[in-house]
Every structure is written in structure tokens, then in C-alpha cells.
Image 1 (cartoon, rainbow, N blue to C red):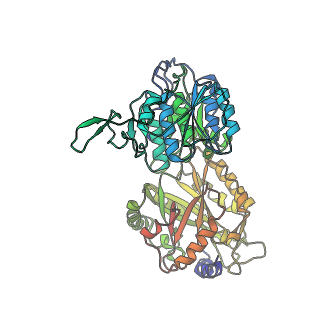
Image 2 (cartoon, helix red, strand yellow):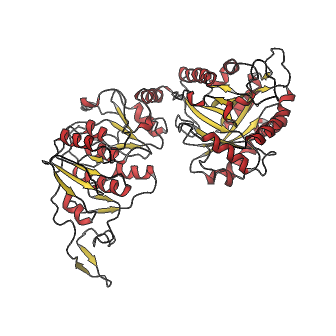
Length: 587
């Protein structure tokens, strides 16, 4: 993994530090009409409402009253069908391929039927769900091979426009599917009866036209219409349809990574599904308003990416209690924005670029760099300071911990300057022999501010007999958890939005038992900061090693070293790193 050079050069770059001694989419959300009559066609969206109207019928009892996660771990949609459909005269079963999923979705929404996915190993579960639904007919899409009771009539879709019309009684309205997970799910959440998501096969005469409203006609080269030849799909019987339940549906949330069948099934049952950019209801002002407007109604999350039921319940609670938001809106640190940060200490440039100027001058200088990143990011880019609050020292000091703790008031001008500019501050701890939790508590008042996070620099965490520069330090997961527990409680007790919790690392040994760090703190955004420098190949070797077996709940950060990198990455090169870092700091 080529860490030796990184270790040595990192030690050299830190000598000065040691010797100084002084680092959504707006889709509708209520499935029924205001009076709860549910008289829309299957697949139609209701009027957007963020809170129940006075006198409206309660959500159906089967959905319960508490937040709930339908994990749908195999993306089969069975778990969603079990909750949202008490019965159905027919069902659609598709293979997992995107084209089959999109086709099945269009047909099912037009007919008001559940969509199930045949994974290749869930045949018995599919058969059991068909039996529970009381479905007498099944349409298979995409070459499904599954054993069903002989009493079930099986139709096979050939993918043509004509088959769509025969099966649904709807004239197909072709819709080109978007090429992103969130875009596709948003399209599904907005489909209307007759919308056909995806193109028909090339051999389908109707599909070769330009989406003509009448799929039985084609155009000759001179523009005149003529009857098409015998079409596929003409011998298919129309699928039975299921009317919308006369009951109110709950708020349903999905996000990139939610299964297509899960969203389609909830929609076909009559629910409107809100597609979030991230699997957390605090991601935007819009989603926050929805949660705050529940007024006792349940909310259903689709997909294991929303976490456990306990975790999801906690995120909904936090959505209603936090009284401030992140720069630009929402309560989450990431996603929603990327940060470009200067690293340093108020004592001067020896400890990083941030200290080379006054707070206001540093903000102005950093803003020029942020402007270079802005057009390279799909999210807003904001400035940030990573402020070294406790500095590892070459001498033990009066308390013997080989770390000098800055007076909180010394840091406040930089915090005020960056937050006044719409940015974010992170306090960095270089603890020496001190306990991280003890150092963190020194800055309690600063961490009670809404736009201030915390970073742990394990390189400078020393054992009881260790001194700086003789080894690269390390921290045990238990000590990280101790700080995380405290910071999460502080955040919740002060009704604060989520805080950045940054872990610096450039060697695997620096964070021992990393896999046991407790990430079940929705109050915190866990950020892994790749802190290596050198040549591009050295940096990437470290970066790739650190990300091996990394829990996907971590957000990735990257550091550019102004003097030590050879050469330092440009903003364009930095934003081409895969995965693209959410937090980029400069030292």
C-alpha cells in the first residue's frame, strides 16, 4: 500500500506543528383527494399537502402510527405489496433488468396492480404473495421463469406498444427514462395511466414511429399514414384492474437505491411517493416540512438505505426538534453541499494556510478558490475552515499531555467570519496524551453553535509512554465512540442540525477496529478524511486502501497539500476523484 513514504513525509510536514508548541422534487404527497374519497384513477397524483386537512379521514389502520421502514433487501417488492395491497385480481412479475422493471412499472400503474421482481431465488415467496393477494392472473415481463399455482392464468408481455394497449386499455404515451437512479424514481413517482416508460422494441411498428398517439398507425416516407401490419400483442386479454382503495395512504419516502418495484407498488396502490436526494427526511426544507406536517400520521420509508426502524424514527424526531439549518437549507451536513476548506491555526502560517491572514482576509481568499470549484460540482459549494483547536507539542507542557489547547475565544473570530460568510467551521483535535473527550469538552460552547463540527486527528493520539515524532499515533474505536456519543447528545439537547464528525486517517492502523465505530448517530455526519500527501500515485494508493471495506455511510474527504504534494491537484483534478470528495481541505 506504499505507506512508508507517506508516513515519513507526513512526519516531516508536522515537525513545525510539534515544535511551535503554541491544528425534492415537489411531487404530491397525499394519495387521496381532500375528502379521502380516493376517486382518482390508479397512478394519478393527488394534490400536494404537507399536513392533514381538518376533518379528513385518518390513514388506514394497517399502516400503523409509527415511522416504519420496509427494507425490501432483495428489491422484490414483496414486502411493499404485503403492506399496501390487501388483495389484487392480478399482479405483474418482472425480471430485475432495468428495461423489464420500467415496462412492468408502466403496466402496473395503468392497471393499479402490484409489481414484484423475480430474483431467481425467490420463487416460493412470489407464489405465496400471489396466493395471499388472491390474484387469478399474472403478467410476466422480461422472460420470468417462476412456478405458480395452475389456477393462475399467466400472460407474457412481448414489450410492444400494442401489447401495452391490449393489456391496459390505455393508448401508450412513450416517456424516455432518465439515466440516473433518482431521476428514474422521480419519473415513476409522476407516471400517469397510459405513460409508457421506455421505448418499444425496434420490430414494433408503433415503436418505430415518433410516439404517435395512435400506435396502430405508422408513417410512410412521404408522411402519409397507413395501417400497420399484423401486430404483436393482439391476442392478449386485458389485465383485470384494481380500483383505488377508499382510504387515505401514508406519506411514503424513497431515495436513490430504493427498488423500482417498491416505488411502483406503492404508487399502484394509490400512494404518492416522495423521492429524496438522500435517504434521510432532513435532506431538504421541503422534506422537513413534510415531516413536520404529519400531525400524528405515519411515514413509510422504502429501502434498507433508510436504516433500521429505530434509526429512521430518530431522524424523523430530529427533523421536528432542530431549530436551525445548515448553510443553504436542510439539516444534513452532506449531501446538499460540498465544502472547500482552509486548514490552520490562528497563530500564523506555520500551522496552515488559514492562519496566514486575518479571519476576514482568509474568508475572502478562500472564496476565490470556492468560485473555482462551484462550476465543477453538482451541489452548492460553500467555504469552510478546519481550525486546529489543540496543537500537538514537542514538549509535555504544564499538564504533561504534549498538546496545547487554544482558548475557545481565540478561535471564535475565525468561526464568526466563516459562518457569517455562509460557511462551516470544523474544530480539529491533536490530543497528544490527552483524552479526546476531555479536549472536546473544552470547546462545548463553540460546538453548541449550529455550523461548527469536530475533527479527530489520530496521528497525534499518543500512548502514555509515547512522545511525538517517534511514531504515528492511533486511536481505538472505543474512544471515537465516546466522543461521538457525547457530541450526538450535545447536538440533540441543543436542537442543532447535524454536525460534521471528521476522522483523519492515512494509515489503516491509525483508527483501530474502525469497523466497530458506532455509526448509529443521525445527529452526526461521519466523514473519513484521507490525509496523505506526496505524488498522485502515493495519494491514490492511500486513498484506495482507506476505502477498503469502508461503511457506505461515511462521506469521503480529501486534502490538498500546497507545499508537499508533487504536484498539488487542481480543482478540476480534485473533482474528478472517484468517489468525488464532499469535503476538500487545503494545508
